Length: 182
Image 1 (tube, rainbow, N blue to C red):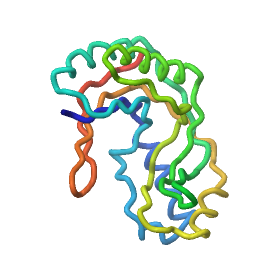
Image 2: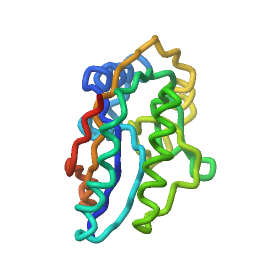
Image 3: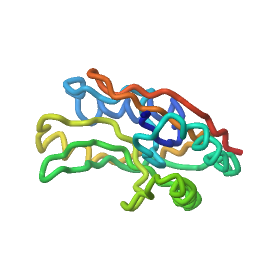
């Protein structure tokens, strides 16, 4: 079995710019173990565990992604996903073209015949920056939620089928197939 997901690759310069905001927003940002820049992406579809012999068929079915044009996006805010009352994930929100939501729906419908269920939650375009295992405090939350983003636009021109291996030190991503957009 292998664990897979489909993601839009985010340009390195955008990731570095967003990560640079940490020092401005919260000077003690280095107290936390942030996602490494090479792991930051926009998840389009978490596939989950599948049998290895399904991989070839998955790659072929997802080939339609190459028919899409590059996407214009912009980073627009920071936010948190909560479990109960505790924040567990800090994310950077993205404003995306409606075409991207169409792509997400098409990925879901293309994979359903392979017994990969469609995502039931509404798609929320975001980049996971920090997974919090301990409480971070109200000051940390307030600092990120109140930050006013400058206008940071970018173009995403690649989608990738990734393998995600769960290791004791955290997950490791490996590109399985790159789908270059027009």
